[in-house]
Length: 102
Image 1 (tube, rainbow, N blue to C red):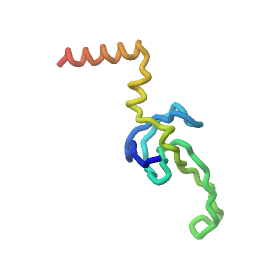
Image 2: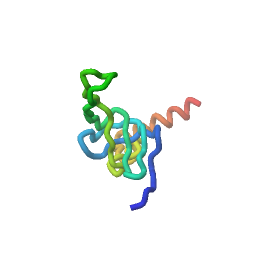
Image 3: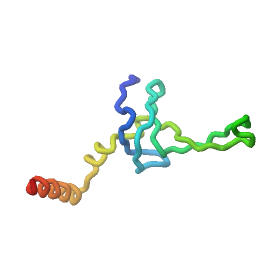
Image 4: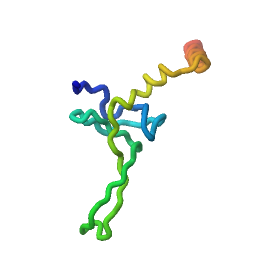
């Protein structure tokens, strides 16, 4: 199995599968023991909180759930692999123009 980690806090990742497929976000936390990552604003789950002094009525809080790291990819790597031919030409032209202006 191996616990080789390919992600760290602050990386921008692209979701490959699941309900949030196609979205991207920033990694908040990496859980190496379970091979999972928590991505900001994605895979939201509801957590029921019992009544206590702070919350006399109780509460249903929404927070980010974990995603297995095989279901995410670095966003820049995904973009590099999935550019269409037209997009590749326009990005190359934009880079050439920037170099010519310098």
